[in-house]
Length: 144
Image (spheres, rainbow, N blue to C red):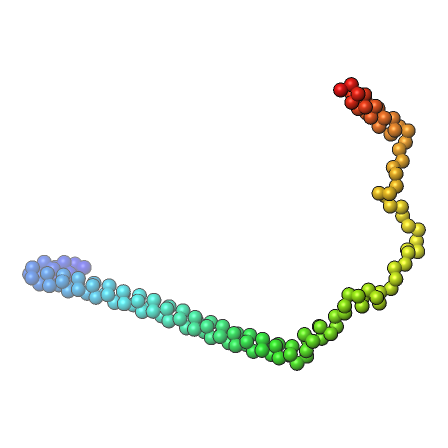
């Protein structure tokens, strides 16, 4: 460091400016090299991304071909076995189903009474509580 200071003092102003220009030029070149290196790294990343994308596209195309083949095989099997014909021949008409159905028989156990058909049984206490409001309502109707 001390040697550089002594040399700098001994140099003429022209030599000093030329040396400064050389340092600036070298810094610019280093910055340019750094920038180009970064671009190359970016391009490598882009290259790997593109390769991965191409690989995925190939997989998608292979799956599409396989799917198409499976659909075609399924259609052929369906036509061979006549699944549609079997479905149509196995169906019976509704009147054929009802005519072959067994007759409805009454239940063997004792039937429970239908709750909507029976009348409600009230106790004398219930009748008294119902009679009072009814009587008051009838009297109110005649008064009005």
